[in-house]
Image (tube, rainbow, N blue to C red; front, top):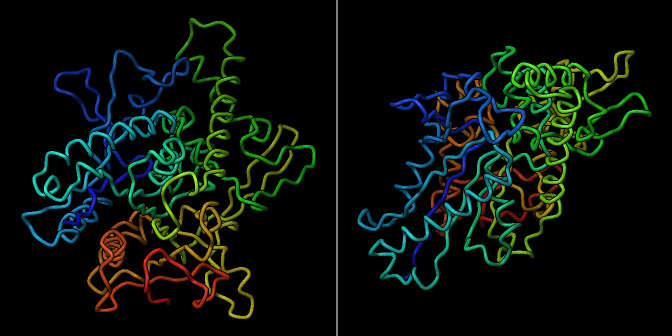
Length: 436
């Protein structure tokens, strides 16, 4: 008997509820509309723990609004028989932590899912115990966690197929804005000092800093050209980290040096992680390009460039909207600019992993929501395409095809080739696939 491996879904940053287990009963401190920044902020002396102690903040469940629909659809459509369900497990995690820690937790979760599946009768009868594997889906930062996990596990990773949706392989300028101002398209859009403090002590956010070729315009040749270099950051950011250290650690000496070292350590760890992801190749695993469905969102106005100027007070970020562009299929005569687009959060150029070719990428647009998905179209217009991309019915059908190998009898799945890729050279993981 053949079986479809169980599925693990990994959400993006801020996509998991957080609860403080120190009070009885526990308090929810992070939700879709509830953001208790003071209680989720991490301690500068040890960012594994909360700044306000005693506390014990832990992940709860993943958000329903962007993720409930895709999980329910997969649970229903992956199986042929209701008596032989294909499990779809959501992986809730503490998105504040460094991705290396989350990777280890995810590795343990994969093992747990396999052990649980070995207890399901129809999987045992199908021989799952002798060949245990899982299928993985990652949205946004969830795709980075999956990629890092596969890089660490290599050929020992028990993975059959992978789907990544709108993953910022080369970062997002929204991470810069979140750290600098406290507001962006990565989460809540409420800008306040508490949010800036929380953002600047959130390790994982630094892992999302952009490193897109020729996308950073620095007007002073004396300045570094990488956002992973502390010398390129506005002095106000480092000053706010210092103020936070002073507030939380009044009893610690040499606070100024400690603040600068903490900021530099965040950037150094993020740069090392990005280098590891950039160097990852499928040849290190048992996977091939046809096993990895990589989806990028396009045709939404997205910040694709950023300018940094030199002033008497140091570097200054130009965060004006003129660098938010959407040139997707705008000029038929000059297709070289079509890539200056994105999903509202992740630039198209940043959604391209080094381990796949542009021919392998499947692009989707907000127009790909179906006739009856009016509400999702409205939400996409308000919250952004990136946040609500997982709700697209067509994507659900495409993922089911990828995991099951079923044909598209009704022509209900499609995609767009990446800019510069013709329909004839397009080589998506799911075949045949109608090119639009």
